[in-house]
Length: 511
Image (cartoon, rainbow, N blue to C red; front, side, top):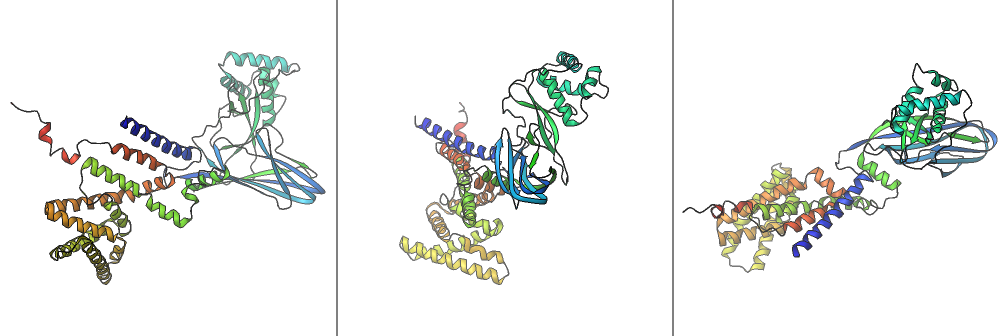
């Protein structure tokens, strides 16, 4: 039962940690690498019109949750106009209004988007009604139903039906039925509407979608009509000119339905020009902007909400559990001997400032000198507490002396010796001398070298850029580390260093 309790607790900690991490990655787009970058598109729409010296209202549709993109910022520029926004069906609409508008006017809408390449670009809402069959006049009626019969015989579902219909409708050498239907219109939007009427003849729901092709450096861009059909569970998109399914990666869905993009009341008809620019940004910054835009409380109560100075402190402190787990592995599973449990980790923290090579040299020098003086104190027969205080004073004097000598020799790295934890050094010298007296020089040196080995590995782990980033951005992963430590606490098998020692016990006995 005790083991079951431990296993359940470890499983719960792991599930909570992994779930929170997955939410940050999937929902907020937080990167798993500190160097990840993503493409960011800035799209600006300029609405131009002329006022008639009276009150004016401007309605403008703008994107709402465009598939394949995450909105990380948007703003409106309209100095003399009041602004309101509302939702109309699946679209969003900006409403500008002002009194006594005269002369040329320009309104701006700017949106910043980050690509979500793993996102599903199909849409399921809203669920439409099935259309009634239109009343086609002759000869269009005969052409529509003849075309529908031919397409139906060469398709298996709504997707293949629509693709076949579009390919026939855009065939450079169309048959007689298609020729009759194509005579009714000659522009792209008109053709999409004509195809909608044909699909309605088969009672297939469809709608027009206005899309913008994203091209870096584009100026004076315009929207293009796209076709979407409903297959009973989701909307399927098609290029009306080729019949290809799905939206290309660089196409932005601006609005659904074929309502006018902009309408003006109290002014001349407006024109809309789109400008596009592409840039690369760090994914972490994009994720933070996205979290603020969707009012996510995850980052609000994360380490990113702390002052910058405090964040820098935790960037170091949160690496300590990584070093502690290294101690667990090296002591419980490998069998490396050290002086104290977490003394090597504190030494590893000092190595972050001194660098590994200089840290090893300085640590070895201090411990060797301190050990020599500690043996001298042994002859004075001091009590424990005064002896420890004396060792501490000696350690501080040695640190100051090494710093001065290093500075005089031009070795500026020696100045960082002050970052070593002096109390830990004093305890290390004391423990090493006691082990020397009780178990001999070999055991003392092995424990000292083991401590230095663990500190060096701890430095490499704690100073790893990717691991430090992961622990700071996803501190919930410490719950997974905690679960591993709990499970390691029940290990009672052989350590790796003991396999040689007990190898004779595992060999079969010979008669």
